[in-house]
Length: 355
Image 1 (cartoon, rainbow, N blue to C red):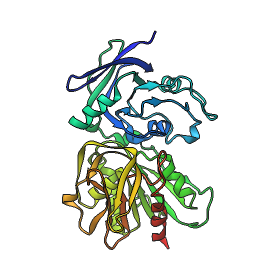
Image 2 (image 1 turned 120 degrees about the horizontal axis):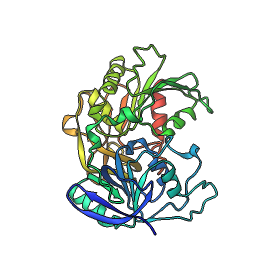
Image 3 (image 1 turned 30 degrees about the vertical axis):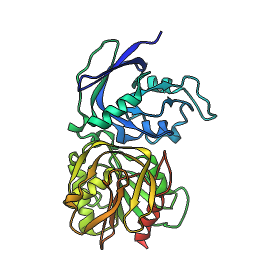
Image 4 (image 1 turned 135 degrees about the vertical axis):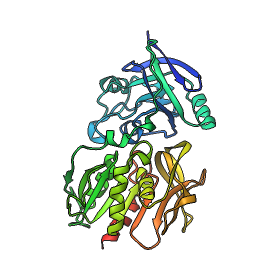
């Protein structure tokens, strides 16, 4: 017999279901993601740190859990998980365990069997809110992860040098990857192009430490970008030195803040693999993978920057670019995983700045 559990929102709403995974009580910010695939990659995306993630797709766990090489970080990053129907007999040749076994192994709690459609409608109407999964009547306090510097919790503690494993198109180019919670496929995307990557902690200054980097990439990551003050200070130095600088997701917000722009919290964010994003000049619409709750404030764009991409659904900012200097960033994930690779060309666009 499955153990009962409750999902309690800060407005008092209660959803009843069954406990899965570690079956312990947890709290965080309740958000929803509308993607149909890639739950294993989403769960290991550090941008979800501190969040209780709701998958709107009804069947989760269908292909089990692949080997660690296919994850986007070393572990599951979410604070908790909300699922309508958990598959207990997966089918895939790479599957090494069930999703429930993986959750138990990593001590992550889930609630199963609730109406995720109703929950998503509430979050869209009222906005994301704090919540908690209560198992076995062991109550816990609500917790707002955005009051903490989550970037510091998911970033590496020391620099790592990665040499390219294939490709020689950009052999000899060295870039610094400011890892604020980077997905692994960002690193893979550069290594496949023959680039040497200095993977840096969020607060490691490559200029003060005299690293021989030719450009800077600012990764995705969790939480309020204004908490990562040391990252912002490092990006300011890169802009002062006028080296090519490329921001992804959280990196879009951090670049804007470093250039004296502003950011704000979205009502319910963008978390999906089907977000339509339009490039300003060409008017071409790209289908993109996204995972963010904050956005760049276009009412206060930094001097010299202009709107580059915008969201076709709500017209919010999806990227900025400098009018003269090699600085640009996007709010979506060109490295995908999961999701479409429509915007992978942005890695080549960045590398062209070194020719």
